[in-house]
Length: 116
Image 1: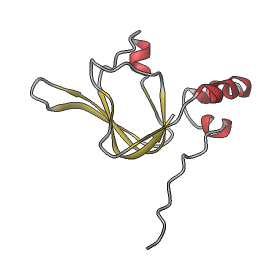
Image 2: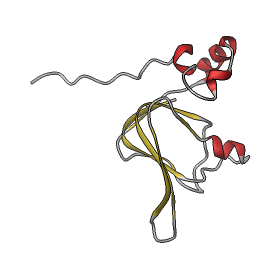
Image 3: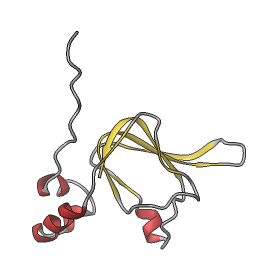
Image 4: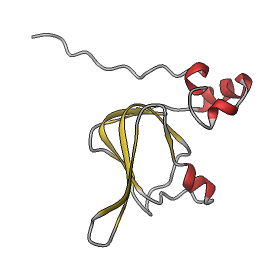
């Protein structure tokens, strides 16, 4: 039997942040400070990160690998206004802009994902 190799978190550095809006607008000194504050998280496929109107956001999230979806759930459990987020995209900004730290949509990993 072959040993199981654990996937490693994709490396995050200033050059990868410069590829992503809104980080691409920031100077290197600010990016260096941000890197020290960012925390990584591995999500399993189908794992829910935030539940609509219940979970508290941790801030702006950056997808490094995998695929994330966000959606509204109606009273009958149907998804609407669904969006997918691929590597080097961010989510969570709308809640921040609206001045709330409560998730306005459910956020879940479609496949195993690494985020910051």
